[in-house]
Image (cartoon, rainbow, N blue to C red; front, side, top):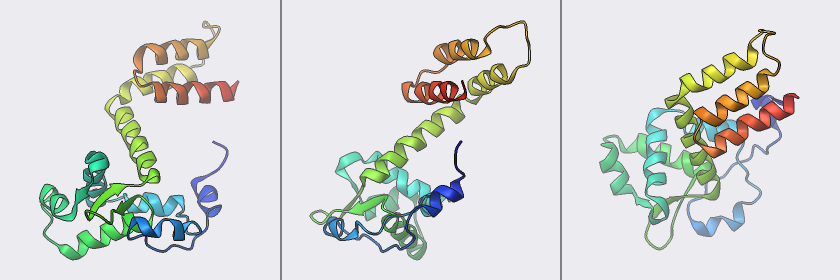
Length: 173
């Protein structure tokens, strides 16, 4: 990795204002969230659950009542604070016409990466096997990267993740 998370986050502006509806998108181009704020917005279980309910509603969106019922929300203050954080960091937006929350383009990218992480965690033993081969010191094998690439091709079924693993392997060579 060429940079730390801290270095990447410092390259982003820190000034933030909340987006409350789609009409605020054009006025918010100067208010770019940083990586640490985005990760903080989804870092606790309840915020992540709200984000997932909205994401799983796809383009139809999820209204506040539906979200609260699905998650059995009892404390309004905590719920609206978490919702505001997701809005402020540009992950979701409330539509003007039907008052539903939908993912922004940034939110869709974040959700896609969350799904990739979920896939990796569900198949962690496969990734550990690939890592063990890549760091192996056995000289009886001439090209450990080819063996690891073969394992990746056989064990990993998500194309996006295969591309990430192969890209990282090529960068090392």
